Length: 198
Image 1 (cartoon, rainbow, N blue to C red):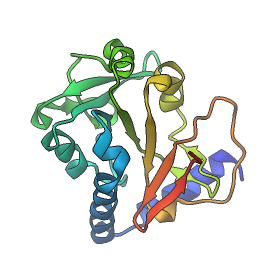
Image 2: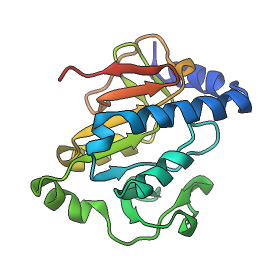
Image 3: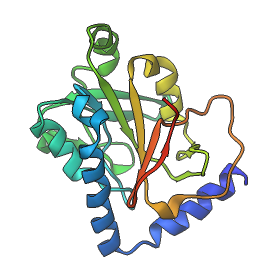
Image 4: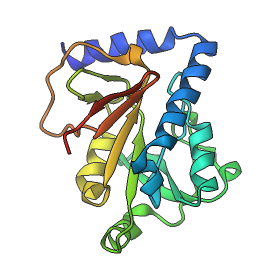
């Protein structure tokens, strides 16, 4: 399957999920993340603010702070086609940014501290969104390549990457490009759908 067709199909399926199911399944997915050892061990979490029909991250982002971890959220610079993560300690201080998505202020970028944290023995986790995935664990994003580019620069410091998705977003196997970065794990509402071999 071509990426464009896979993205269209997954969008249609995801947008067709009822609000009730989306809310219930999002809670299930977020609880599953919080129960995992790689979450418990993480000192720093790069997460995202959910948008439209994505898996909600409202609770997991609050839990990250409540659990004493450092939370970093993305800010998108569409004119430069780049994304940066900034530390957040108060979720009420986010403001509308790219496509209306809530974004953090430009303070304490992860890119300036990630390597030091990693070399200092900190466990770093990234939680990412996605439009679609296949049975081989490949991820399709929104087409901008923001996460792939970010991971090409900062990925060596990030110990675990996990995509949150609804099971309905799974599509037939598609051909990847050399720049595509596969997440280590994909969590859906019925548990762990995909895990890279350790």
